[in-house]
Image (tube, rainbow, N blue to C red; front, side, top):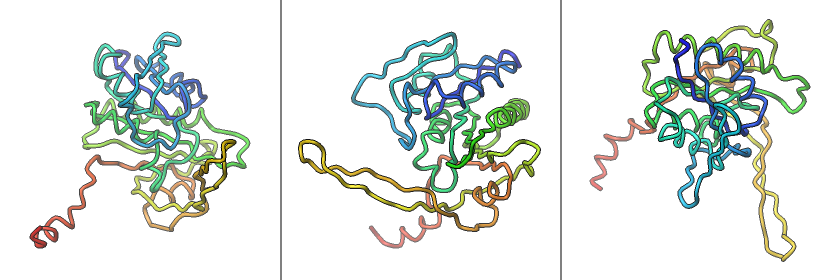
Length: 253
């Protein structure tokens, strides 16, 4: 197990607590390398830097800072930075949920997805579902679960064509009710755009929207976490709407 190469990334930044605690938890089971953004990239989704250089800096042994998005980090790691393709990619631990339609905006989820695109056959994104009013964050318990999942995946071999998206309730482990295998749910945000003018008088807008509720969809990630369970959602890269293929053929386009 010690020869396993484990790649870590995130969207919160290379120096954040979640990824450093995660590395510490995984160090005993493999060679763990962090390649993560130099600054926060939350909500950047699956972006790649195409029109500017991406600068890579080694902060300390096996910890690299990248001036780009999570996808840039993984791309650089797989295509030249690391000596070989990692055995597994883990993106996190993110501070905040990535459930429901969050998966389309999330840099955390994009990091794991990019790993699969780049030929790493197994991996997962991991988020700690915190609330603004929370005063304590259960990083260590989340990292311990990540180590358990990593060990399980490396032992069994992930046979899916995608990756896992994991959301861990911000609860001490003794209050976790278990694990549920889930599908993507439906979260709602209070969508808001705040308008203003800069010092030169030009208009700008600031996109905003606090989380407000979720749909009670049986078997969904939102419901599982709300009930005190760890949510594990298998994700695919293929976004094809197969139900419409035959219908569109009848359109004679």
